[in-house]
Image 1: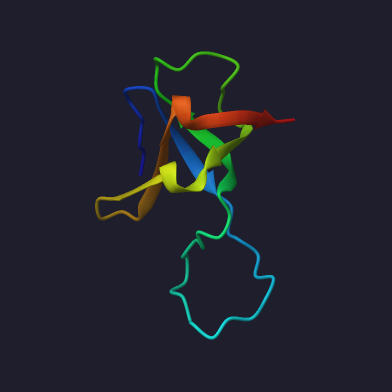
Image 2: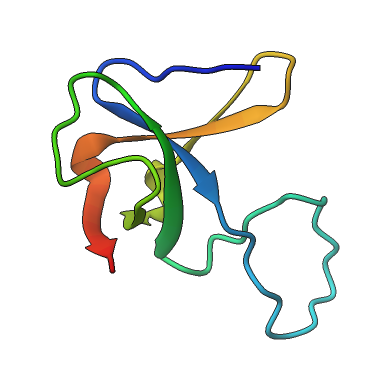
Length: 90
C-alpha cells in the first residue's frame, strides 16, 4: 500500500507507549494511551507543500491528540498537520 499525504500533512509512524504500570482496564492492542500530552513520531512521508527542515526519516515531537488515524481498509495510517509539529528530535 502506498499513501501520499497532501495539504501540509505528514505521514508519521507512532511509537507504542511502554507500559510503566499495571492497569485494571485492558486496552485493545495498538491503543495509544492519552496520558502523555506529547508524542515522539517518525516522519514517513510529507506532502509537497511541507518545507525543510521537516523531512522523511526525522523524529519529531507533536501533541498526541493532534495525530489523526485514518483507516480505509488497508490498515491505519497516522497523519499530523505540519503546524502541529513542536520540534525535531536530533
